[in-house]
Image (cartoon, rainbow, N blue to C red; front, side, top):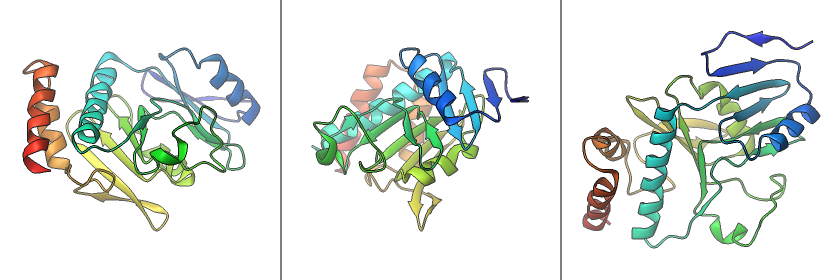
Length: 209
């Protein structure tokens, strides 16, 4: 029998959930952006994103997209697409995820098999009401190269090295970006219009590339 563990009010955790149940839920909720699932060997977490969560993930996503545009890098966004592997009994829906280094390998793909296809290069997690740190073992198993995590106050960059994530000052996927630069622009969000801020960020990129 499954049971619910104590979590923030917008997060529900169930234990003893079969892979097949998780897969059915993932399909049923695929068109419902108000629910995010992660699965780790029988433990299922269901999270309902709040407005602050969505605003910050969208802005961080714009920073990634603008950076690749200015640096003339190709990019493929998978958004919150479910990344899962039955052989590992693990699955997760990032807040945002992107192919950059591996974009050419999956450019024309629609269906993904992560036992064969490379994982996204970069994932974004927003931790306004709950921590994603307990889900990092899922990302490690899937071999996602880098994670950006924002907790509402600070930004953390985690790079996959020797099978585990290590906190770094600079992105490895987009080396022009440091933790301090990302945080500087995040802290300006809300003080000026978002498009104006992106124009300022674009100018910074052009001055530093």
